[in-house]
Length: 285
Image (cartoon, rainbow, N blue to C red):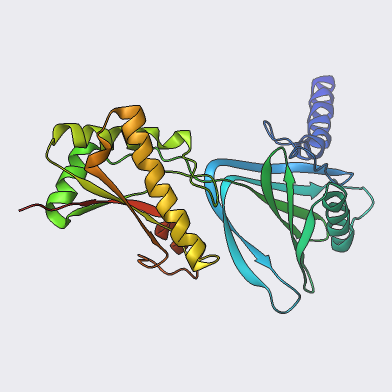
C-alpha cells in the first residue's frame, strides 16, 4: 500500500514538473511568419489568421504619428519568453525586428516608446506583396500584427435583376465589382462576374443604352484622374463589346474623375468608395 502511494506521489510530481514545459511550447498549428524569425527563448502562444481584415498602424515621426488603416490578409502572433531564460528587454526585441526588416529592404514608419511598452510600425515588400507589421513589445512578451496588403475579393456581385431595379428607381447603378490595376485602365480578371451581369442586363433589355461612367478618388492630379476615369470607362465598353457581344453603339464612355465623390477622400475607406464605375441610363422619350 505504501509503495502504491509512493508511486502515485512520484507520478503526480512528474506531471507537475512537466506542465510548465508543455505550457511553454508553441501552440498547435502556430508558426512564425515567413522571413521574420522569433527572438531566442520565446514560444508562440497565440496565432490568428483571417483571409481579409483591417488593422491600424501608427505612421510618422515621434509625437506626430497618425493612424493609417491597411486592409488585406491579417495575421496576429503573440510570443512569450520561456521561464528561467535570460531576459530580453523591449528595446532589444524591437531593434532586432527593425534591423531584420531593414536588412530585407524594408523601412521603419514609426517608433514609439512608453514606460512599459515599445511599439514600432514596419513596412516591406516581399514576394510581390506590400507587408505592414506592427510590433508591440513588453519586457517578457511581444506581438506582431501583420497585414499583407491587398484588395478584398468581391464575393457578392450585384446581379442583372438588381441592376435593372436600380436603373428603374434612380436611373443609375453603382458598381464596385469592376477592378483595375493601380493608376491604369487595365481590367483585372476579378471583374468578369460583374461584366457578365452587365451583359446579361443589356441582352435582356434590347432598348437599353447606358453611359459607362468612370470615377476616381482625389489622390494625384485632377486632370490625370479625368483621363484615367475616361480610359477605364472605355476599357469596360471594349470588354462588353469584345468579350460579351454587346453592340458598342449602345454604350458611351464618360470620365467623371474625382468630381462626384460619394464619401470623404480623407480616409482610405472613403477613397475606396469613390473609386467606382456607374451605369447611367440614356433616357429616350
